[in-house]
Amino acid sequence: MVIEIEHSNFPAHMKHDHKEQHIHLIEGWAFTSKNYIIFAVGVLLIAGGYIVMATGETTSAQSVTIAPIMLFLGYIIVIPAALIYRDKK
Image (cartoon, rainbow, N blue to C red; front, top):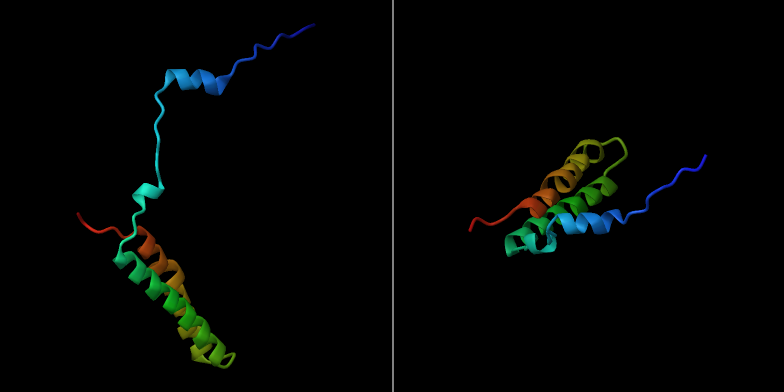
């Protein structure tokens, strides 16, 4: 029993059927000075969180509560906000 497989160039076939759309991600990510300021605040929060954690004792409120809150705010709130924020035109 012989099975014949038809070879086709699927990407080339699809190229002829649909118009190409060019999406430029970098062009949509124009950072302004506000983005850089928000990003810098996030980096300072993260650095401050690690400093607070390192200077506190192992079981102190400083190392167990304050530093993780600062790190959470920096990593999860402020840095993504700097990436998402856009000026109104």
